[in-house]
Amino acid sequence: MAELFKKILPEERELLLQKALKEKAFFVFKGTQKAIKSKINDLKRPNYITCVCPAELMSLRTRQDVIVVMVLGEERYFFKSFVFADDGFLLFKRKVDFYHLVRRKDKRQRLPNSFPASLMIKRLNGNLSFLKGIVLDFSDKGCRLGLNTEVPKLQVGDDITGNLKMGERRAVEVTGTIKHHVKSKSGALKQTFGLNFQFPHGHASSLVKSLFLDLQRELFVEFYGKQ
Image (cartoon, rainbow, N blue to C red; front, side, top):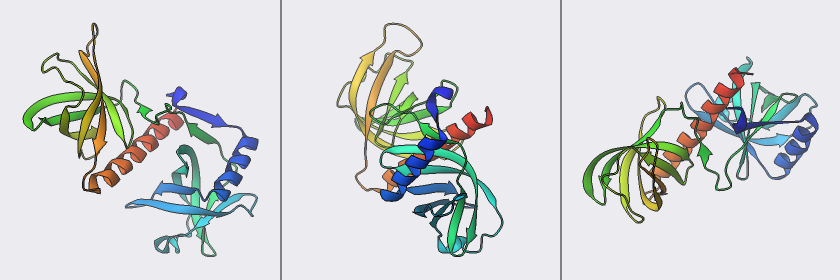
């Protein structure tokens, strides 16, 4: 798990926060019922990061422990803090350890072997299917999967519809097209293939993005608990 997160030095953290303020980065953290998104407002307080406060959190006076994801362009940074509302703003602890999520150049997240993630394939080129693909890496744009069977032999261009399941979360239906395929000569997986998601109606796109962010947060929680 350690190879997924790189600790940021304190001096790098401050430069990173200045960049985040300039580029209007935002924080995402779990509220009591939903994910909360808040843009960085200023860094004038030496011990706190000041963010815009959503209306529903204006009365948050008790400090609440949270795992925070800082979204800066295509990069993701994680830290553990407390949050509370003060004078119309959200305040996060500033002098904490920040961790950079290390991802592949295509931004897909490699999953640990022990993490339960699968795609139950319901339709293959419009025909009924009962295949189970093991998710090897994942992003909000697509995933790489493995099958432990040689039949049916998948091909580039095949269309797939299935239920994407990550851990204990509710499955999300996705559709996609196979962009690359490799037949394995050894090992438990007989075929591996890359699937590019298609979102004709847009709704599934937001669900998959939320699932991806939840996955990253869960990996960080597991990593942080081992420190």
